[in-house]
Amino acid sequence: MSTLRIARTVYDALRAHGEETYPHECCGALLGRNTGDGWRIEASARAGNTRTDSAHNRYQIAPAELVKIEREARNRGLSIAGFYHSHPDHPAQWSPTDFAEAHWLGCSYVITAVERGRAAATNSFLLAGTTEEDKRFEPQGIEVSERAESPAAP
Amino acid sequence: MNIFIPTPLRAYAEGRDIVQVSATTVSGALDELTRSFPDLRKHLFTGEGKLRAFVNVYLNDEDVRYLPEKESTAVAASDTLSIIPSIAGGSAAPRKRGKASPGKSGLSTKERH
Ligand SMILES: [Zn+2]
Image (tube, rainbow over the protein chains, first blue to last red):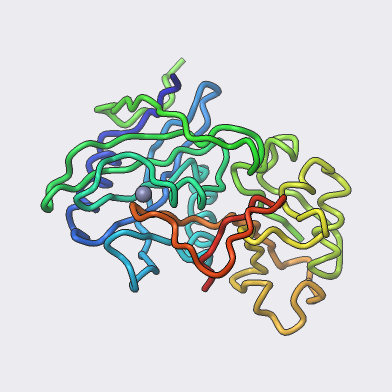
């Protein structure tokens, strides 16, 4: 099983985001670096949920917002490494909709269950495979690092 | 002009996040890109040569689909083209709308704004 490494500040922020938007779904992007053996998430970017018609059980990030998030990430030397969203009063497991609409192969999809307004389980799923036809979600471990990692001095 | 390659497609562009092309239109730029990196083609286009429904192409901050001349739009060297797969989901089951056609394309994006 692969592991998603994520800074404590980011982990706490994405869970707090789910509590803030409850009973609606929150969503955002995870920004990180590819370390050679998986992503290390160093920042996140909150996004607006454009699914105002069904925000309690759907989310969508406007592509225009993603373009801006990507540009900002690039300027900081980071890449979009995945996305997060919440499941209000619903388990932290991917849904058929999540799978059908997941297209960022090799990226992590992090889901937080928010039960009656409080963040509960947070799980990560790697969108594995190489095409739309053979893609699949694989559960990943989450390793929360307490300190912001900086390149080790030689 | 620069084309920004999204994370999932970098593996098919020798790991690059930016590819420079010298084309004068959006479609010319995408052609040049996929000539240089042929493996990208099937990830961007359907068998019929149309952009896959979940692949968004932005010229600077504009969705190419909504530009008057769409992919024929002229581009300048200072413009940027962003390729951005869509991102959506939710806890609900997918809505069945119209005739569901799980055809060869495997596309299942139902929402489009
Ligand atoms: Zn979901």
